Image (cartoon, rainbow, N blue to C red; front, side, top):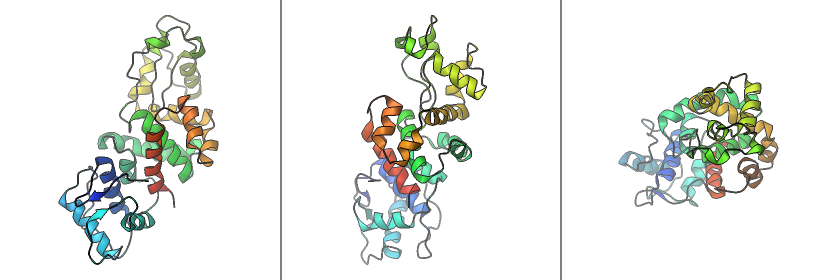
Length: 263
């Protein structure tokens, strides 16, 4: 379900759910419904959003006495889903990455547009699964570097951390985090970015294009399009996480992505 609770007049109005409805109203295409101006996708349930819901119910859902509220299993949401312009737009991405800052989302939107197809993330379902994993792992693009110091990776031979200080130096970075000397070295060779020069390893976290590209590289390396094509959230999650940590949150991201991307 793309929203968990009611949105609108006397609704529960969680910020995430409100963003979904605001974006959906902006993206709804019909001769019978036209907003005077686009809604700001801020998660705040002001009068303008309530009025837009009410107008939508009158004109497109044809409810004679609209209640100004969208329920998760109601006709208003069903009608919205049927008429939303499908595809990855800036409004859709803002709603999918509901915990993100608009300034950060604006940076990543053109990067996604230009790079997803390079890694054959070229269908709505593949895109939805990729965004779900990236959304959870980075908290909607907020974090591109592991919060912990990385000291716990020191001496981890499975990660190729053979030199003193490798744990901290090669801590997790990127939207889907690159971790360990071996993985940094492999990605550096692939991308031709000199990440092995001391000090350059932080570029994966500081440069949005690299933070995204390393995640796309990881996706391709782990052959995650195959799992995505089967709509196998658990399978994708296991290959990203090594377990099922945050599975419900990943599912929530996936539900929002499917609402805006899938027919």
